[in-house]
Image 1 (cartoon, rainbow, N blue to C red):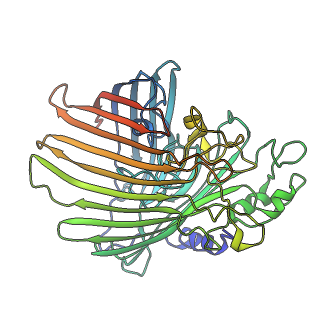
Image 2 (cartoon, one colour):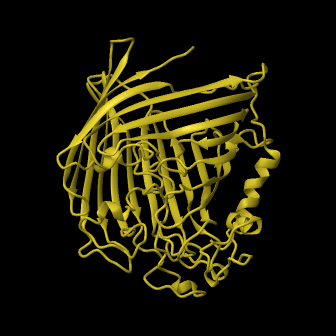
Image 3 (tube, rainbow, N blue to C red):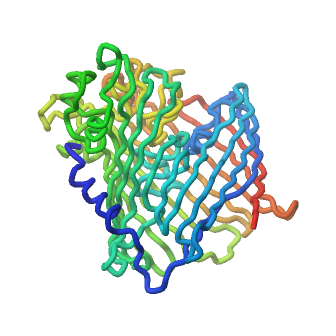
Length: 491
C-alpha cells in the first residue's frame, strides 16, 4: 500500500472520541471466562501429524508424533468499580505440555488486562483471530489465522463492535493497535519487532436484517538485524522516526542503517488484507458472505492482483429440530494466491509491479512466521513441511505461496447427543514464481471430529478426531486424536 495515513486517521478518531456504547438502557459489563483441564493422545501411520490436526491450533500441536498432551486454562476478571463493572482487571494463562520425542511446554496465553466498558488494554500473549472470515470451520484468515503461537505484545482496542455515538447504533467500529517482539531464536533475523493494527466498520444495527462490514488489518516486521540487504553491521533501520514509517507504511526512512533497499521500498515487511462482508439474517439462518483482498508489495494499489484473496460463504441455522442427524452450520471458501501481480517486477511501473512473493521478504528471509509456523493462512506452507519432496526457494521461509484452495467446513449433531464437525480441503500448489513446482501438485486434507458429554466426575467431554492427507504436497498420512476435557468453575 502506498500509505496508511488516511486509514490510520479513521482509526484514531474512535480512540480519541468514541469511548462509549449508546444504548437505551445502561449496559452491565460481564466478562466470559474459560477454565478447563484436558488430556489427549495422538498418533499416525508415519510419525507425522495430519494437516488438520495441527493447523490453526495456535502452534500448540506438534507436527510430528506420536505423543500425549496435557492442557490447562485459567482465566479470571476482577471488578474494579461497583457501577455496572465498568472497570475490570484480568489475568489469563493457558499452558500446554506436549510429550513427544521433543517434549515442550508452551504458553499460548499469558496476559494481564485492564478493561473499561468494551475496551481492553493487555500485555502478553493472547489468542486472537484477525479479519472478516469464519474462524472456526474456515481455512483461516489470510494474514492472521491462529496457526502460530500468539506473538507477545502490548495492545489497546475494542473487544467487540462498539456503537458510534449519535448514530443510534447504525454505525459501529471494532479496532485495535499493538506492538510486540518476535522470537529470539529466529533462523536468520534477530531482534525483530512487530507492529499490528486493524480497523473495521459495521453499517447496520446489531439486530438489523442486513449488515455491511468493511476494514483492514496491517502487520509489519521491522527493526532488528539481518544478513541480507542491511547495513554493514547487519542492523535494519530502527528508532522512533523509522517506527512511524513502519506504522504509516510510508516510503523512506532515516539513520545510518538505511540502505538503498529501505529508501526505495518501505521500512520493514508489510502485509495484510482489506476486507468486506455482507451479513443477512433470515427467519431460520444467518448468512455471511466475505472477501479478503491481499496486499503485500504494492500490487493491490495498482489493482494488478485483485484476483488474489480469500472468498467465503457461511450459513448458520438458528434452530435445531432434534433430528438424529443435523447440519447446523456450513462454510465454503476459495483461497487464490497465484497471481501476485504477475511474473514481472519493475520498480515504479504499476503495470509490472508483480512478484509479490507472499510471506517472503528479501530482508526478513525467515518470513511471515513465528517459531517456523505460518502466521497467516496455513496453506502457504513453511518450506520445512514440503522440503521432503519439493525444491527449496533459496533460504526463504516458504517455497509454496502460489495456491488455489477449495475448502468446506460443516458442523452438526448426531443422535442429538454427539457434536461433530468436518474440514475438507483440496488445493493446487504451484510453488513460487522463481522456483515453480512441476505439475502443480494437488493435495487433499480432511478431518472429522466428534465429541459428547459423559455423566462422570461432574461432567466430562470425550473428544476424538480422525484426519488424513492424500496427495503429492505432503506425505500420505492417516492420524487420530483422543482426549478428555473437564470444564472448571470457580464461582
